[in-house]
Length: 218
Image (cartoon, rainbow, N blue to C red; front, top):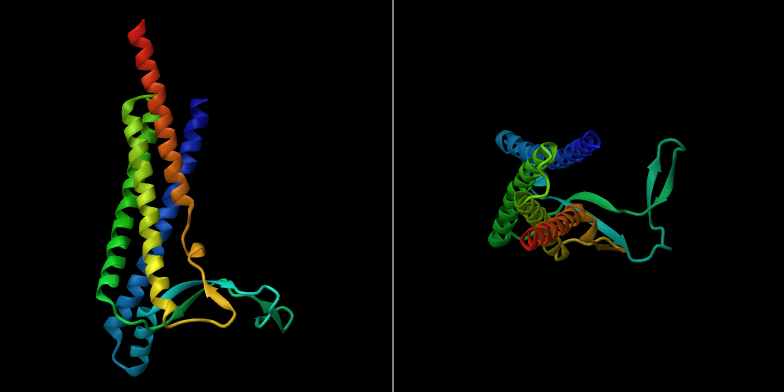
C-alpha cells in the first residue's frame, strides 16, 4: 500500500512540475525573443518585428452565433477551405500605454512564479512526510493549508493579468461575430487543487483534534 501511495505521489509531483516548467518555458521563450529582437533591431523590418513581439496578446474568442459560418481555414489534405470558428489566437495589437496596469501585470506575474515555486516546495515536503509514514500531524496540516493558499494565489496571479489584458484589448480590438472570452484564458486547475488542499487540510485538522480529545478523556 505504501509503495502504491509513493507511486501516486510521484506521478502527481511529475505532473505538477511539468505544469510549472511548461509555463516557465513559454514565458522564458517569449522574454528571450523580445530581448533578442530588441538587441538586433536596427532596420525598419526589425522594428516592426519588435513591435509585433512587444504587443503580442493571447486572445480567447466566443462566437455570438454558432449557426453563422463566416470564417474558414485551408485544409491541405483536401485542398479546399472548410468552415471554422476561432477559439484562441495570438494577435499583435497596440494598446494605450498605462504604466499602472503594466506594473500590476508584472507584479502579479512575478508573484505567480514565486507562488508556484513555493507550492512545489510544500508539496515536496508533504510527499517526503508521507514517504516516512509521518502523515497525520499538525505539520502536514500547515503544509496543506500553505499549499492550498499558494495555489489559489497562483490562480489569482494568472487571472488578474489576463483580465487586465482583456480590459485593454476591449477598447481597441474586436472581431465581427465574436466576443472576448476570459474564462478560456485562465486554467481553473490550480484553483480546484488549492481548494482541495484546504479541504484535506481541514479534514486532517478535525481528525487530529478528535484524536487529542479522545486521548484527554482516557
